[in-house]
Image (cartoon, rainbow, N blue to C red; front, side, top):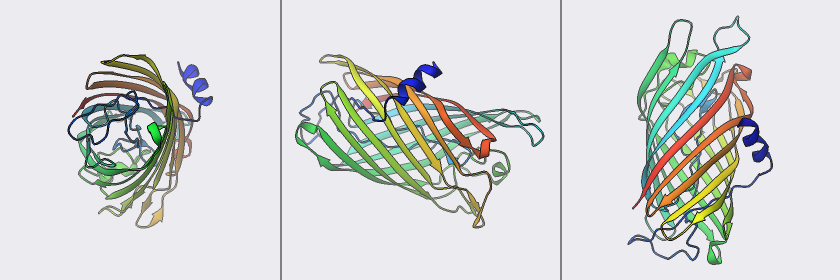
Length: 319
């Protein structure tokens, strides 16, 4: 499976997005293309996992442009258990259940919000360590900057903020992976750009975002984060009530060094590139999607952390 995902992903550097529009009292204009939604995509997920800061799950193409839903996101890493062992043997599991919603305000403006609940686990020589609890709260405004005739070209921009509701444990930063946390403990700010080209059963979607992270009350600051992605969607089945599409693509992440008391911390800058494969299906106003991500390249904690896999599953309900 890993070879299939990575070989296919390497042939694609564009992101194809497919979605079905649902019109209700808040929809201000009927989409001339009934198979693709008017949704923006970002990487606004509060899951931690990378050795340099918050990991990213991606924000799936939504088959309903306005929705409320639930998402499960899982990450698996291996880390060096101690200084005297060269192999990465310590399993680390980051699990997140996320409530999210997107609500239109005007024809071009919508508001997206998410709240996460984390349950993480890591294996150590001294025994298993588990943490669980509420994560940080994200909110973002998404604005449609460009929308050409028949929605062939669309450009969306967004600005968001993360409120530090999740607990930050100062003891957690002493391990190999300082991101073994429920939250960053800081107010963080994000900007997003999303371009979509769509025609017939195929579309191309490119995403990029940048997160500025601030110092928390413990004088710790996770490194700023840049994400980029390209994912392909192709419509396999379509009728009046049901749509089904497959997806394939790539996703990359780059992290600056963490800081403590203003000083750079070693082995905290990082980068990673993943290939991803998944599907999305909708029936009336209910949509279901899943995705698996496998690493094509990682440089986490100067090699002390190895990314293994990511998996996500979501259910959304149109509103």
